[in-house]
Image: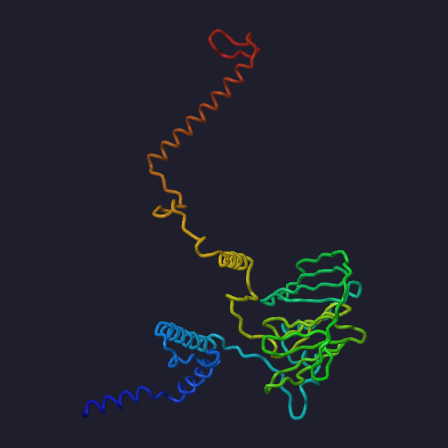
Length: 349
């Protein structure tokens, strides 16, 4: 009886974690609930044993996946999203881009710019899934592909202008008539109309004004689009396109298997091959029967033995002598017959 009590006390001591580890455990549980995506299936009401077993194994797999995702978020995704914070009664939507430019680093300040192309606008723009490239298109046929990391123009073409019927959809949000909308990765909503952009944030379950930006008078906004994995909002307008900083809009951590902003050309090609292979049905993929059980030929050239080296030298020297003899006999045959003596020597006169 005494041994059983001692064993129970030891088990309780093992379950009690230090305060730091308790906080981590509580944090992981909260993250795990976020990835569970709701309550699990009620297995007690099921009468079909086979279905019950299948759902039980699936729920167990969901639990493992949620726990793994929570640990990854905790330990492998340490970067937190930015935000705009003000002092006292000051409102965030009163902060201007010039004020933000004074507080950010040089790399971030490069994302504040205006490209003025009045002859080809208005412009619309879009970003790739990784946010690495941007495509801007003007209504008069001008297309530009830009590398957003280096800010270099990759490709620029001029297409013929195509006239089309324009359907304009206007949506009203908080009394603001929006012509174009865009959601960021962190849930911010940008709405643009005329020469004014308003960004709304979901702070307490309801969208409220977070930031605002006024374009130069006369600029008519055509398209707003958040750049993935960056706190940047692109704005296409009648005079070109612009870029402004919106703290807290982009996801700070990226998954290189999904979208990698730093992807090289080789990685992009390999990714495209994998995507194409994933589209093929599994039954169409098989090994080459002629290759099974065979050995791959060695790429390294085998070293020759001393005897083989000497034999190759002899063959090479014999060939060299034969070439010299052919050249000598050929030049001798070109001499006139009268210049050749009876003893076979060439006697040049």
